[in-house]
Image 1 (tube, rainbow, N blue to C red):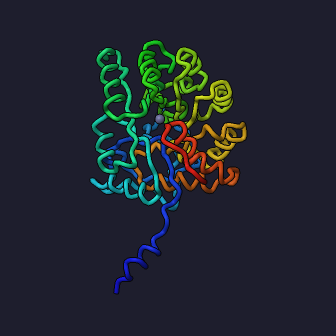
Image 2: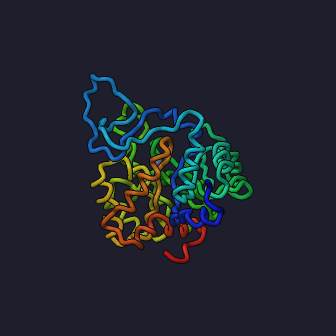
Image 3: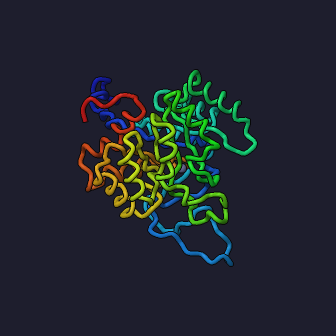
Length: 322
Ligand SMILES: [Zn+2]
C-alpha cells in the first residue's frame, strides 16, 4: 500500500546545494565519442611512429570501477538532464545556437547559453559580428565560448580576432577561452595546427591590455602552466579559471596538486567548477566528487569552487548561506 502523500513528501531527500558547471558542450549524441572511459588515468603512453596512432586519446587503457559509459543511442540529453536534476547542477552550455537551444528546451532552468565566432580565414567578419551581436543581445546567449584559437595555431591576442573580443567587452559578455591542455598525445597526428605553447596564460596579456573590462574565463586553467597562470591571476583580478577537462583527464594526484597550488597561492575565489561534458553522463558526479573529497579544501572553498565563484563571475546571484 502506498504511503500517504504527506509522509512521502517528508521522506523526500532535500535537494543538494546548487552547483554551477561552467563548461558543457551541446553534444546531441554521446555515441559519436563511443567508448567507455576510465577517468583520471595514471599514464600517457609513449608510442613509436611506426605503429598506428591508435585511438583519439593518448591515455593508457586501464581498468577501473566504475567505468563511465556513453548513454544509449537517443538518450544522452535526457540522461544528462536527469543527472543535473539529481545533483542540482546548472551549466553553461556551449555550441552552435541550434544545439544549445535544444539543451535549453530540455531543461530551461538549468542551461545558460554560450556560443562563439568562426575564425576560418574566409569568414565574412562583418556578418559574423552582426550574428553574434544578435545572439548576445536578443538571442539570450550569455557567454562567448568555447573559443578554441589554440587549435588553429592562434594566440588569444592575435589581432585577426580582436573585433570579437571588442564586441564581448562592449556588450559586457564574458569570454571563455580554451587554454592549455589539449592534443591528447596525438596533436601532431590528428590536429597539426594545435600548439601547446599557445595555451600559455600570459598570451592573454595583450588582449587584457586592449580590453581592460573584459571578463575572461581561462578554460582548463591553462594546465599545466601553473607559474604563468598565477602571474596572470595576480596581475588581472577579472580573470577566472575553470578546471574542466583537466579534472578527469590527468592522474588524480596531479589534478589535486594543480588546484591546490592555485588555491594556496590565494586565488580560491577565481576557480570555477566545470566538466567539459561531452559524452558520459556519469562524468558530472565523478568530477564533483573530486572537489567534495579534496582534503586540502575547506568546506567554504569547496562551495566557492562548486558554486559561488561562478555565480559571481556570471552575475547570477550568490548563495545566501553555505
Ligand atoms: Zn577546451
